[in-house]
Image 1: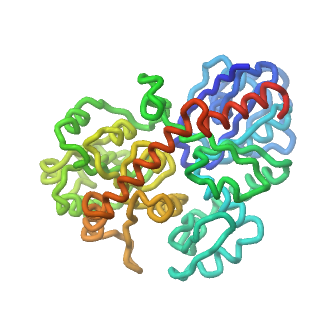
Image 2: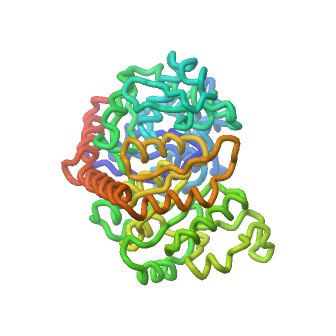
Length: 442
């Protein structure tokens, strides 16, 4: 059997899960139901019966409505868009059970976080939360690195403003634990998280990552530069030409992803830190929603000096930028996609986490994989100052510690390439999974 695996956007930061369903009538097709649920949501035609899914979530459409979306996806006519955790996970889970379609889950955060959440919901809640106010407190969980309060996902902290995410996450795990040894495909590779992948015996974790376009990974398809799910687009020529004019490993690349909007005071401090570093930089600053360029409400005080010393763009092709030889440092919010992209391209980082899983990803980058340094914020402060930003930039871009980070980053780059090449761990894991599906053993 040859399996066709469609990879939509992996920038679904609102959810950790995506469903994968295997159509028993067309076993050569494996498709992400995040795609199909959205197709059903957009469809206006109901086909077949109008039977409701038993005990379906409130946001779930009728069975026939979603069947139409499934048919559209199999015919290649569906589109990709944002999904809430409820629609992407709970609705598709109910649908797969109702249709008796085998399904698996794609986990789009590190395996370390999957194990952490599992422990939290299975006996370690008090251990994790009882001393989370104490910055010096560390929690030791089986198979995971030692985690301090500043390493925990933000919605586990007392200052959390996203507490509503926990019940949804818990419901997802309860559904998983209702199955016998459920399969989860994980966007990681075995060498990267060798202990975390084995931490939870209850689940069968299969590393199939890093899920990066081929042009930047194994080079088999130079035209494969995007999964097509970028939220913003723009011309690449001008900033790539600018990068071409810079010396090797000299440029600082700054980006905080597609969702995070920093406060103006924090951006001012970043700007000062970049200028004080006296190095060329490429900084992605998105125009805030509903603000025109003429409004200038968030324009930085030193914007003209910043434009003289570096380049500011509203969008860029991130993996292409990170792959450029002139880039020597990545200032990142540590979203999982950005984290993997830094490892795949061998670029050391200044870790600047903001929320959710990013704090744990920053811990892994700094202390486990040793490819970066994390910014420190003084107790009681909400902004990282320019002096601290400059310190981190100088650490990564110069000195023996910076050289060590670069060596480590290149090591992980080589291991990532090894994982996805023919016969590598991720290639082998995915082929074995597909073979099991095709031979009816799963």
